[in-house]
Image (cartoon, rainbow, N blue to C red; front, side, top):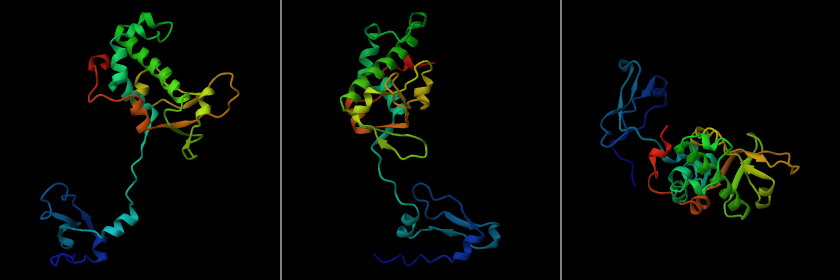
Length: 215
């Protein structure tokens, strides 16, 4: 396909005094000014500015879709938007107490904490069964590496249920060492396979009870 004959190359020196207006977002904006000099009187303004596609992708290659999700984010989605959590939330007494002070909480707080604890237990049963692929880093400077199935007898994903905001904001879910296992390495930046985790805990189209999660 031949170039549009109405287009002309812009001299490189133009960009020493020019800036983009960012008036090119949205439909039918090709006739608006896309670039102009500062001050405007210092040179021409241009409409319908275009780039060489191959050069753009060479500098900013398109990222590949990542089939992984941070464990904290996945946990929050599951306990607020999954069929599994909805069923348990409707019968909170079927879940084990979240701690010795469980009976001193209001019903909603106790249910939230019990859900996180129940999810933690159910998740680790699935991890030990090899149902969900997991990656993590030994240190922030290390690459993500897969966690082997046999490791789950000695480590666990931490989900702090004392403050549910930890899950909501992603401030949790490092991999910690189970006491008495002799393991010395912890992990951070834990990620699940999206395919695996949401196959195990399918999400509903919307939260099952906004009232339960209101603060």
